[in-house]
Image 1 (cartoon, rainbow, N blue to C red):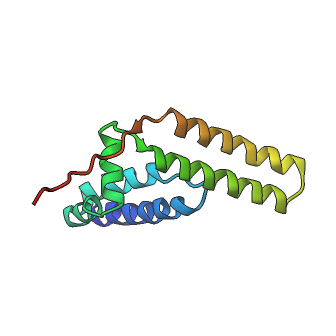
Image 2: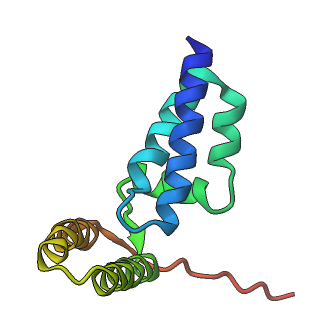
Length: 127
């Protein structure tokens, strides 16, 4: 079973990373699935995922209900709608525009309903 969980976790991680740059592929569910699979399959892989400088804090914040930073929301929405607009321009058919609009509205609604995590306060050392 460990090989099964590691395999599913690795595929989920790859899809989650692809979801960062592909607008209609979700990132969060795949990263959470990868984390859950790695917990069952390999403590080492789970620890590496959770200690990753970008993905680890993202997963932890989502699990804790802290949401995502405002900058992340803005970047995701800009990238999403830029990609959808480019796709609509490349395929000038109104029925395709509708097909692009439906997930665009869904993803936008989902992102806007997530809690917005306040920016981290940087500690200034006085040495």
